[in-house]
Structure formats: structure tokens, C-alpha cells
Length: 512
Image 1 (cartoon, rainbow, N blue to C red):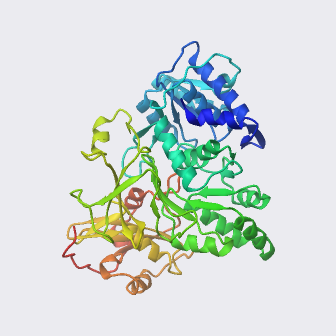
Image 2: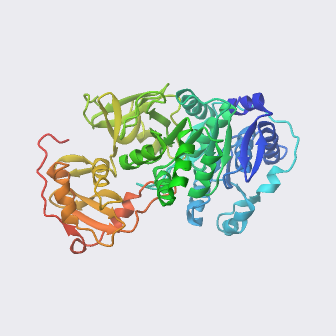
Image 3: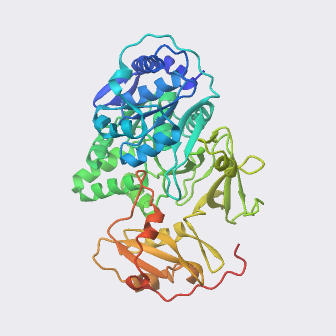
């Protein structure tokens, strides 16, 4: 039994979704999902975990298709509406999908793939048409969804979750963040990722609450929805909060006051999917009174840690373990580390994914022999709360025997008046292994990097100060707002075109 769908029967008359200016009840959602399931089955009794891909914008129809695939026994594979055709083709080929359900706006976009890979492009309208075929019960231990990793460090992998995994991910957050049926949330996040699907949409629908879709982010529209007074929760990525702050700053004093008052009334605001710069958190609190709740999660685990809903939310930290989650911090030999010592997060619990699709070796490598999922994220327990230092592969710079957190340096850099944003990476170096290097974003046409380095000497140890700088108009990001650091490294100019500070960090005596 799929409990998410079963629970919806308790709320049939309540509004489940607001989409394209129209409200839909839980009863309407269930009926449309049944139509989708019946049309997909086409006289079969069970899809038996057939992968059904779909390219549909965030909407009532998106949700009906997802639920319909689940009700028919299929595996839902949502596609990103912002991805280019080769990225879509990769997912279709990797999942060996036979059909892709497409919104009318994407039919022509996908048509070339019918000839290239032999997939059938099926119009959204055809699966939504009324069909009263009876449905079989689906066991909750079966595969339910494949979401693809961001691919910031390597080729995207298909993360397979079961219905039980999804339920655990939902109920953990419903309990921790005290969801209830009177809640109302705006969903502005991509629906091919756990943040938008689980944290926002599924948590709302599990609770009998209402989820409103805004398929394309628009700062003015979001502030307008805040001012309507209908929201109780809001969840976004750091870049969205940055854009909302920028819109607020451009408004006149009266409008600012109105926006600030409206945002202050929400019961919870969450930031995730990428590290939240402390200056953004502080500015948001200054203008709205809201301390953004930061949490830690991955496609493979759902959410693992969260700052407290009712207690302390410490800037730069991700709080404590969520209910049902086990975690350990270990060194490179899987031995537990001491308090206030960096280590790798390893996770266990019912929310952890089943496997990487058709990649048994990658799945095996992702877990220790005793069953802990190896996150690849480095962090520490800092005075009672966990802090993320970065991913071992892209955010931990190994220089002169030290392991240096790029995120720590970025947080300090953003405090400088000349720096609007930044990305810190390690560039290969024969002597040091890697050298700390900073890509700076500034509203100014020119920036004095030596001035920044001199200031950094008052803030950081010498070995953490960037030795190379470049100035860019913006940072490369994926659709979730994460900086793609491999792209930052690739666009770095020759050494002669950037500033070298001449700093040579001392070698770490006890570094590992």
C-alpha cells in the first residue's frame, strides 16, 4: 500500500494544489492519478517497475502523472524542464525507458529522440483522459522513483528510492517541522530533485495541506504571494533568497515595510540544496525577522540533519540528526573522530536509497561493509551542532598537507565590501598538491586582490588565504543554484592572467 496516496482519501474535499491560477482538491488529484494509472496500464494489471519518464512543468498535471505512475506499479522518472536535449537523452537511455510523457510545450523538443533512441513521446492529454480501469494494490517495498544526482563532480547517477524510503523521508520532516493540514506552501523549486518533490510537495500532501506552484521564479510575484498572507511556510535555495533581498533593496521605504511585515508572519522559512552564505542569512533576518532554517540532505538520503524548528538555529550550521537517522563522523579509515574534529558524514536509516540504477559497483562503493552510506561530505560537531565543511571531492582543498574547507574561506570572503559572491577551489600545483584559489564576483569593474589578501590575513591563517584570484560577472551554477566548481576550475585563466599573492602556506604537521 502506498500510504501517501491512501492518506489523500482522508482529505478529499480539501484543496491539495493550486496550479496555473486554479485550485484542485485531493479528490480531483486522486481521480486524475487513477486516470493516468489506468491509461498507462492499457489492460495490464501492473507496470512491474517499468520506468516512466515525464517532462511536465510543476503543476497539478505533474503531480497527477507522478501519482498515476506509482498507482500503476511503475517507477516515476521526472525530467528537468530546463535541461538540454542531450541531458534528457542521457536519462532516457540510462533508465531504458520506453515512453516519455510530455506536456504540449515539449512535444516538438522531444520528437527527435523517437528516431535517435526509439522512445515513444506520449502527449500528456492522452494519459489524463478518463479511464475507470480497476487498479491493483502496490507493495510499499517496491521501487518508486529515480532521481538523478546533480552531476557536479561526475556523470549523473540514477538514485533509486522505494515507496518506503519516500515515506520515511516525508514523515521525518513532517514531524521535525510540525506540518499540519492548515499549512500552505509555495513551490518554486525544480521537480526533478528531492527538495521540491519531497520537502515541499509530498510533505504538504501527506499533511492534508496545500501546495501552490509557481513554475518560474519571479521575485516580484513571490513577494506578492508573501503579501497575500496565504503562506505559512516557504522553502528555497540561497540564490532565491539573494534575489528576493535584491528586489527588496530596490523598493521604496513604504513597499519595503509592507514586504518585511508580510514575510515576518510565516511560521517557517527553510534554505537548502546549497550552502547558505552567512551574510544572506543575516540580511534576511534583518529585513524579515526570520532566521532561515538550514538543513542537510542528499538525493540519496533525503534529509539527514536540521536546525531546530523551535530551538537554536546557528548560522553556518545544519543542526542535529533528524528522527530515524543514524550518523557517524569518521576518518579515512572509518574510525570515529573526536568532537570538534573534521570527519566524513556516514548515514544509516530507512530514508537511505536502495541503489544506483543499473550500477551495482557504484552502489557497493557507496556503502561501507557494515552498511553505512558514504556521503563524501566533510563536517564536524561544533559545540553541540553539526557544521558542513564541504564535499571531499570539490570543497576540501588538499594543500601542503592540510585539508582546507573552501566553504569556510568563502564565508569569510563574502564579508569583504568588494565581494558580492565567490567560489573557492583548489588548482593543481606540483609543489603543494593544490593551491587555494578564489573566483570573485563584484559589482565593481575592478577589484584590488592584494587589498583582499591583506584583509584576509586578519581573518584566517596564512595557509588558508587564496594565492590566485580571478574576477567574474557571475558564477556557473546548476538549476538548483549549486556552484559547479569543476566549471570554475576549467574557466580559470593561465597563471599570468590572474593574481598570484606569492603566499606559500606552511605544510601541516598533523594533517591527514
